Length: 68
Image (cartoon, rainbow, N blue to C red):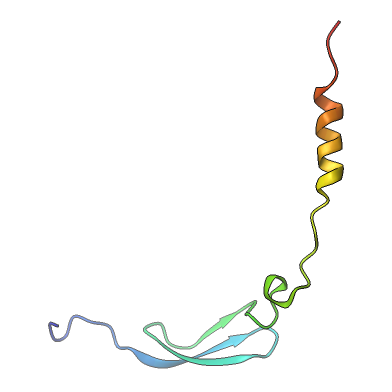
């Protein structure tokens, strides 16, 4: 690798809005984020189910009408 062209790769702390702190390494340094794997609904299993049945019925009703 060439000397002097690569950014500094330093230890960084990622702080989440829920209070979780993660230690990693980054060229950007310390960061704060809104969601992490401990509070994101997808990872915690608290993600709501979509109401697909209602949408399908609405679609069928809208496009089943015929012009006479």
